Structures are given as structure tokens and as C-alpha cells.
Length: 243
Image (cartoon, rainbow, N blue to C red; front, side, top):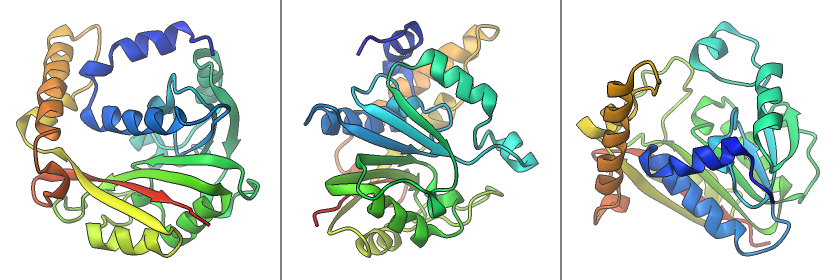
């Protein structure tokens, strides 16, 4: 796979990007390295930063951007985003405008499904998870993240719920034989600093955001973070379909 300029530029910035991004990418690259012609379904990927440069055939499925809430929260995709994806990315195998809870995707057609900060937006969460299981091949894995409901209160008008760890384990275990859910990403000043937007017109803010992400990454790899319910902002789950 020959990377395009955008993919190379984006990957060069990885050390300075938010730690959740880096943790998801590490898991994706570790999994896709296990075989050739790996097929990945990126659910709710929008501009899909997590699968940029991943050595696999990526299919993106997302809702069409139609409502004011979607526009204000940068949710869903439109034709402009579709065009950008095709121009910038070398690993895009397909783009599907649709709802994962009622997709027409074929049974057992993907080696891996990834869904980053999506499930909290889905009303029919159990149907969503069952569809993910349906499209995975036997032995396939589902990698997902969502806000940590043991600590993070829900103030987002588009979030249907925030899962506690035990609740997410229970949901995933209805459809997957092996489930592991961990706490991730330390909170605090440096996390907030790292979430500030980057812009060439605001170099000081961009520098401070990158610095915040570097510090927060170190904090988020500290001992015990994976079992720390209080003070962490996300849940990261890996579920395997073994039969």
C-alpha cells in the first residue's frame, strides 16, 4: 500500500495527538499485522482518523449528515467528506451511507470492526452490537471505545447513555464469547489542554494542545490506569467472536 501525502503527514503527528487516538491505533495495527488482506469495518468513522495508514482494506459506514444536531456536533458524513476521504486515503475499500443497526452488509464479511465513541449515540445499542457480531467472521474482533460512565456524567445532548464498565461487559457478552473492557485516559488539566483545536492561525494554542497530549499520554500509560474507575474518561473494549 502506497501512502498518500495526507496519510504520511498525519502519521508524523501521532506523538502529539490525543492518547485515545494512539491507544486505538496501536490495537488496530497489532491486530491487522496478523494477516494479509485484512478487512476492517469502521463504524461511525466520519473522517476516520483512527484507520489512517492502517495496512488493511477499510470500509466506512456512517449515517448521512442531515440534522442540525449532526452539523453542530460534526456527526455523520456528507458528499464533501466522502470526496475528501477518497482523495486523502489509500486504504479505503468502500463507503456506506447507512445505519449500523439495520445495515445490508453481508454476514461474516469483516475480520475486524472498530467503533470509536459511537455506541453512546445509538438508541438501539443491543441491535447495534448484534449487527457488529453478525458481520464479523469467526475469530474476528470488535474494538470500541465509549465514555466511562463510572466517572463521566452525561451532559451531551446526543448521548443516549454513558456505560459503567459492568454494563458494557454485560452488553457485549450477550453476543461475544470473549470480552475485555478496561478504563483508559487519565483526566485533569493536561487532558483538557490537549483537546483544544489546532490551527496555523493560533500557533501558541496548537503548541499547548500538543504538549498537553504528550503529558496526558504519559499519564494514561501509568500503572493501574486500566483498573481505575474514578478519574478516567473512557472505556476501551475488545470483544472476540470465537464461534
